[in-house]
View 1 (spheres, rainbow, N blue to C red):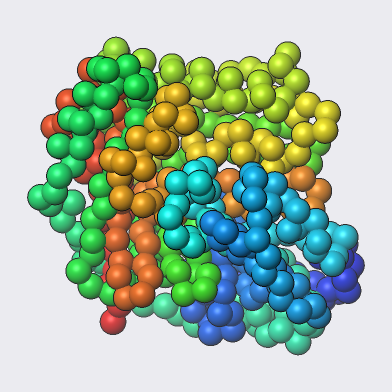
View 2 (view 1 turned 180 degrees about the horizontal axis):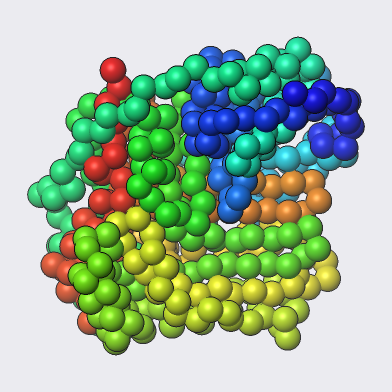
Length: 441
């Protein structure tokens, strides 16, 4: 282990420790989550790097009517807000007492429609961690404000206690509910010209308390996500294996979003997977659904980027994500002068692939056709003082709060959809997580 002191990570004197590790990153993240050292934490996986953000040096909780901020060494503040929720978050973080910071947390789907809420509802919850671990294969870097805690975590990572392999209890994804009826209602509204596409979802309760960390380990081993996450903030727990990126903004102003739309099952056998892929690539309904989603993402980036910089790459490439395969594309641009990462996030959120087209009309329909979504189809994100932001779409996830656990999945309804096929699509998506749910023992 190598130990040092630096000041450029969170804007105050911080201890840093580099640790050579033998466990793989998911096991290290699980070890930290179960260490008992941190009441609140967020684990966030990006390609090639895993981050554990533990404890709260600072905190921002946005409710539908108020915003609460807490910074180390300062009294907590609660004040009303109005206008744009992204602007409320930006203003809250502008008050952070450090010149440099990183924050991690979640944003609910209802962040996009706070005016539709009748009662105080949490829209976003982010923490600036007191300790951060960045792990890659064979190496972990621990940074924190407390040198003793950094050293303690370093020892934990260097010599982790073995964790028994999680033993899942698969959840049946085929249950009786009114999903087909709600899809039929959406098709009626599409036929009447109210909108082109809407995502209708169904909630699947789990009948036992869940070991969320164990589910994270079992599910991550079986999935191939664009991002993964594990969090416990203020007693709300979630883990998921995100198929796509809602928004990624670099410090230099480059923006990327990654719409995935069009779905078939995956992971059955090589011949069946190949046949489903050919079917996906040639199905007019799936191609239309994907193309209009990409077009919408372009239009959204035109609002915040220099128009000439907006471009599509990898159009309609098949992406394999656990139990399903999707049509995927990437849309890029560069922020226009005066625009920020929060503007990009606001323009792209909620993801068109989890809401619909046109987005305002689809969101209004979702408030009628679906029960409140919360984190489902929201985002887990990492954001930094320098304008970098990375937001993963929350799908293929498990949620637990107040002794209740549940899964949730939806399907994009367009002209040509059928209630039975869309129900099957939700089953295919739920199967990315349902076989890997681990009971709490």
